[in-house]
Each structure stands twice: as C-alpha cells, then as structure tokens.
Length: 315
Image 1 (cartoon, rainbow, N blue to C red):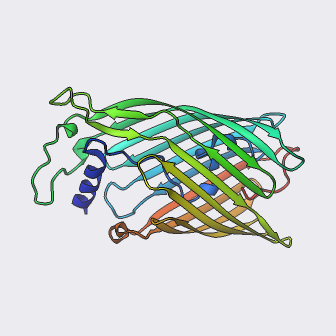
Image 2 (tube, rainbow, N blue to C red):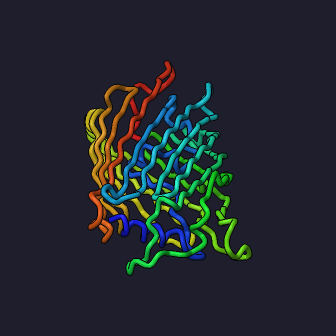
C-alpha cells in the first residue's frame, strides 16, 4: 500500500508541467461557503464560527487530511462583513498552511434580495519532506530525480481573490475566484540550475454555486444545491447535493461529486447556536479499491444578537 501511494505522489510531483492538487474539497461545502466565496462573509447575519476535520481515502498511507477553522460576522449595520479563515492541508510528504482575511459589502437589490461583493487577502506556506517517500519504480529501481533531493521549507505564496454572492431567504447564487495569483513552487537547488522543473503549480480556481430552499409546511425544508469548480488544464468538477431539514433540527442528505464520489450527510442543530455534522464519501473511481472512504466532521457555533434572525437559516 505504501508503494502504491508513493507512486501516486510521484505522479503528482515529479514531471515538468504536472500540477499539484488544487484547493481543498469539502463534502459539507454547503456549510463552509466562505471557503469558496469571500462575498459570503457575514451573510448569515450572526457571528459564525466553523471548525472542520477531513480524512480522505482512509487506509491509504499518506492520504490527504485537512483541518479548517473560520469565523465571520457582519458589522453593526450589516452592510460590511469581516472574516478569518485558517486551513491546514497534508498530502503525503507535503503540508500547506493557509491563512486569509475576508471582507464583504452588501447592497439591497429588493425587499428580499441582497447582492454582496467580497475580497480575500491571504497567503499560504508550503513544506515538502521527500524523506517520507519510498521512491521506487514498480520494478524496485530507485528514483534518482534531483527534484526530490532538496526539501521545500516555508515556501511563501500570496493570495487575493474576489467573489459575488446574490441571495434571499430562499435561494442563493455565487461566483468567485478565491485566488487570482498563479504561483509556481520551483525547486531551487537542482543538479541543473537552469532547469524549469517545479514541484507544484497553483492554477486559478473558479467557483459557481447555487441552491434553493423549498418549504413543505412548518416542519420540512428541502434544499438542492450545486458547486462547480473550473480549473485550467483540469476536468470540470461538479458537486451536487440534496438535503432535507426537519423542524430546523435534523438535516439528512446525499451528495455526488461528478465521476468521483457518492456521499451521505447528516447534521443536527443541537441548539440555535450550535450545529454538528458528518459526511462520508465512497469513491466511485478505481481508487476506491485501495481505501475505505473519506470522513468529514464539523461544528458550527453562532452567537445571535437581538437583531439577528430568530432561527438558523438553511444556508
């Protein structure tokens, strides 16, 4: 199993022109919207803190894990929202730490609809320790690529990106590009210093999102939602989900990541201010033969003021 994953990481990191894994993906993306669109910041009308852990491809040595924390709130007059996000991603020998600040400004389009403009400013730091890899080809021959002789330490990359978010009490639409800066992380000390080999290249990720809440009586709500990610040089990725909410307490749902995974989701609103949720992914690709799925758990804690909505909103 370790050899299988070493070959997988080798394919990601070794050759010229190979792009690294892009932005982290979340099964519970519908509860972590600020991670994709800075214009979402403050849109819930309350101080909202979110904590998530994701273990992907469990059983595969060195598989990706992610921890994410975010907090956001509107200011006094609810036109301006401020937020902070911190993410820690690990994949095999690599670790990326991301911190960014988000700001939004909202205008009233009608009595029920609002349009928010958002901006993200931040940075990432990448470390790669190649000594953690078992670098061998299938026939047992050692890999002698000089790209893997020098570790990467504290490689800094800036981030800036805009977003738009249009919403009412029943639906939302959004478009964003959280980072417009394309950064190439070069290996500096190669045998051939003039080589153009690089370890990772971060492409611009464009996101399009939308969802609608259907209400059935006083107890039931149903929300289909979609998130599409467009990255240059990569296939279009689409996440589709459908969640039901019972008495604003219990949420159950299914999600499908196009040609990648099928997911089950469950959430429970412990109180008006506290929600806990869990998601499980089953891979629909051949990679599913080598792992037992992916797990994701989150907590959302919110503080309501006298002017805030009386009950939690479904998005």
